[in-house]
Image 1 (cartoon, helix red, strand yellow):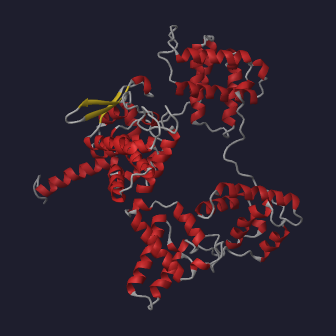
Image 2 (cartoon, helix red, strand yellow; image 1 turned 30 degrees about the vertical axis):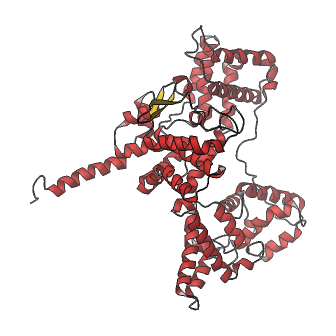
Image 3 (tube, one colour; image 1 turned 180 degrees about the vertical axis):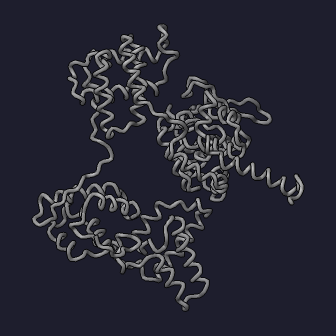
Length: 569
């Protein structure tokens, strides 16, 4: 492969100016007033900083910048909307001065080398084949790649470059389309390099069958099982009625398992009962099929299924030898999982920075200040106040999103005292995932925000009378869980640049508290509703190590400063 040095952006020709080039031109032009040079250079650098990119890597092209700025979180950088608009305006003036706003619609990609131009000319014009290979040909030209050097690792590098390319809205689709079209060209275009590429896929082909495919006797038995699970079970197989969400999860697991058993070679007609589905050799084939779909690597969903199967066998009265065999499969597929997932830990590390902590805990106050400054009382502002309240509740009452979305005014928000006003948020055990009663006294600041929302802003968000704190589009329904989740995540990112889906608040509040109070797992256990303190320790062990060290250092330094222990020597 050629070692020619590519541009900082591997799709952009050297003739395409970057934002860094424009900053240099502005700074060097002595005919511009000094204040103008400073303001324009500041605005350009600030836009790059908000977008998290080096000025030299950003093509100075309006279309590219528009795509890039759509992904920015300017409010998180401490700017008001007016200040952000001012920065964009100043940057726009600098680009206009440099003649950037008059360039053609597409920013200047690297032209094709002679080899790639010759290959490109072979493709039928204005076809999907030509369109899907266009960007790859530009990339190959920019990186000095020859056609005979194209292979699967090169295509993966192309995908990584696409991820950094803000003009591409769907990098995965462009990456996959290039691979498919390359193979198409191999088959159809005379003279095309005879190198076949692996077409990437995010997952193995969908294999799950529909419920209608299940033999009627099996489907009827499964339905009877879940009817029993949902009610009071006098046989004692179920300790308590299972929640609708749990039943739905189990239904999906059974359909998934049934599909795997069928795909492993078992005839559908032979699966007429739960007993026939859980015959040890049949179950083993199904589990092995699911394991092989991941290249023989175990995974959490398979482990959860393996946990359920022996329980299902016991509750349906299957023989002891069947249960013992399923227990062996369960042990073989066991995953030792302690603590939170790495993706959550990665985000929580940001809370080692006090600025991130302040940004999160001060989110609601910031929203209120912005709303007060704009003086608007429309639905858009009402939605901001709704998000601020939701976030405040997640900080002081870190419940799961399913509970948050379905808070009812007269059932979950309990006024325990009128003067001074005191409100508790309470969830009975049967509504909570791990069957624990939860009750949270709300601080006065949250109560004030709650009252403001209920009296001024909530009426702007619904046309119906509703018992729900966060009403949905339709009468009698709460806001959909997914809609509230996205609203919280997107707004928090906009104002703080923190990646905080609602469930991550539960992890964040635990870390923030333990960083300031090392070892006090009992408080976090009660706050999060964990049944056992060991669960809390497993989640946070290691996260508070740095904080504990800081507390220790402070103690030693205080002793050192006070002269305790006398002088050395």
